[in-house]
Length: 284
Image (cartoon, rainbow, N blue to C red):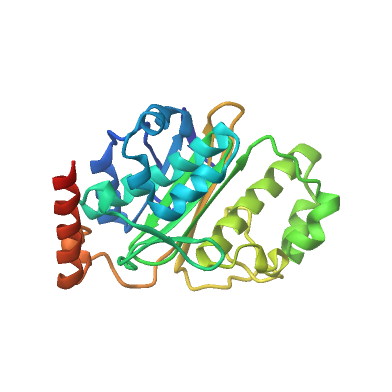
């Protein structure tokens, strides 16, 4: 699996993780230095850990275990399990706790979060073989991925998906170039609205991106933020190829302090986490 960046980006380079062995120190370093990290994987590389894991039920937790068992197709079931396992392992590496001490919960609409640790925002996306995870300690984060070969017809979607400025730019492009740029803009908008917790409820023709991926922009192409957002789009050469876009927010909290759970959580909750880890260790 190789990856290259499309255009300039202030988002830290995504890190490939092939299984439970990491490289986890790289995640901690990225969060410590940049405030965020993006992780990606071919879910098939995690399959041995998922299919043969006797602790899968405990690691997934009640809601995700029920969801896992409700999925009929084996490929869909295991991709779902891998996405949650990757998220838990990535969060545990950043928080410096055991993966089974990380508890995922879901907001209305299905957006995941780390229960008891709102200081770190998380986002998740998967398409066919690719799974992408984002974590940010300075603000919101959103990730989105699509097959690079996906075709969006400009004539069919431009009024619903593009701002006036984007339509003017895209209309000057040739067919293949236009399709590729439209897909890049689509994944950027998906990532941004995921970060905001809005998803498709936010009209995609109400905000836009320029050719360099800077945004959000107003309908006529003027900046609509004060540089608190950074964006990046990458192509992952896995199979026929994927696009991966990231929207990362810096709320101005700074990067002070460690990301270990002892530093991130209040003393009472940290004590509960330690007790839970000890209890689970005694049961094994």
